Length: 612
Image 1 (cartoon, rainbow, N blue to C red):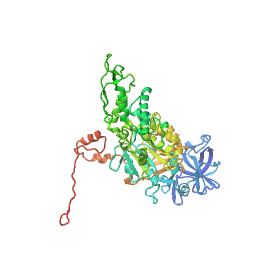
Image 2 (tube, rainbow, N blue to C red):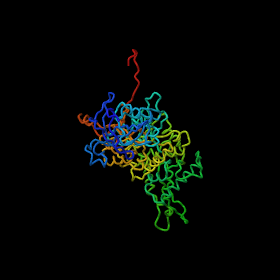
Image 3 (cartoon, helix red, strand yellow):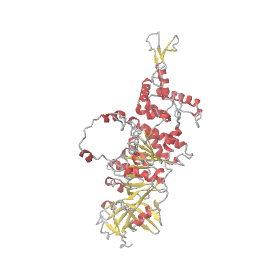
Image 4 (spheres, rainbow, N blue to C red):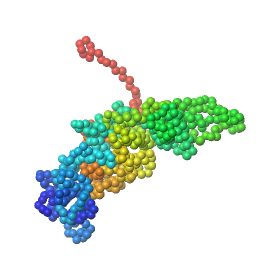
């Protein structure tokens, strides 16, 4: 032991599992050390230390400093209880190669040293095809922090932080780091990322690397369609028909099965054997036809001696959702008579008709070229839908769900994820399947549909992705400001946690419980992190690290900035009516106008002298 070594901190006094207690050297008189012209802070929570072990070095993270780090048997006898430090071991280096995990533990009285810039480069400096640069170390901003792309995607990850902590900017920066559009070799041109954007924040940030689909498309965006017939029957009926008892549900599902079978008989679909057809098979059928057939059966009245002659006065029209009209039944023995075989689903059918007439749900119930006609024929099949979402020439797909009514949002998210997961799951051996071309699904505001008590279709499919997605090349990135409201099962499956500032004790507790490393001391820094600063731990990080995430350029920042209150209130309000406000409210569109202005534009011809 050389106490004159400027990197020397102290000696190991106790070892317990991956935790090491260090007695700081008496010669350590200052919180600063100058080594080779660089200044280092000594004994900072979150900083790294090195413990030499002959041909290899152990590396750890400082989790506690001071009296709380004193071993229990030293607490009463030690004179200076402040000169202690607790370290959580995280990895080891042999030569120039660093890896997580430990092959051996330190011994009592082994020396402990400051990790210098050379050591940090030994840990973080080695690049590679799977290494993605996301920022710099908070303690040494000239050291680039890299994450393993393979582990980030396949082992899942979570970005957690309170409102205003820089969460959206971090996600945008992380996705741009993965895609690397500015890289000389175009970064990852084959990347496949699906981003569920609940607030319309990312279209500006990723416009150059993404295609945007929106339920309320703006210029440059494409309309978002989710064919209802690709959903499971139970999910669809729960939305369009409300609560159903067993007999009522059978009435609906039997008719759906009948319509799908008729469609399949009229035109076979590749890969589907008519004998294996189920009510959940993704086969087109008409909801209007379903409604018409069932309402006709429910409202039929009969006349005649055998009570078998329909008393129809008007046939109605399925296309316009006009119900057939029958002579009302009479109370006496002369008829007309009610249909005694009716299933009692008239109220549910009225709700189905109401849903079909509600323009807010057109993206789901009237999905453009994917809407079947009365015979179940469609202009486009699911292959073109998946091609639009996952097969275009840009690495990122943004599904802007900001214009989706909240009543259907969770169900829609679950439907989108189920369509994508089922397609990639069953095509896992194909070149466009998940194994040969993996997919990363980024889920914003995850706490809204992944709560422990939600029990909806979105929660069920995300749990399935979290548990099984790694095997089939489908990775998940959860983004949430309330980790305490995210189902613990899903969060525990996230191998990498990127934790930004968190003030709520319940949120911090959930993050600590989900961490794969014993870093409770490091997690205590969460309330004091700066905006855009994160603690990263888990599978993708070489060591648990406090990182300053690189900010995107001004033109690629997400639309999540706080309103400039001082600037806005410093300007005297101009008198303006609220007709445009009401017009947008009624239209459920931010670009609606109260007065349509038709401007006639004409080309200006140059005169004889060449002037306009």
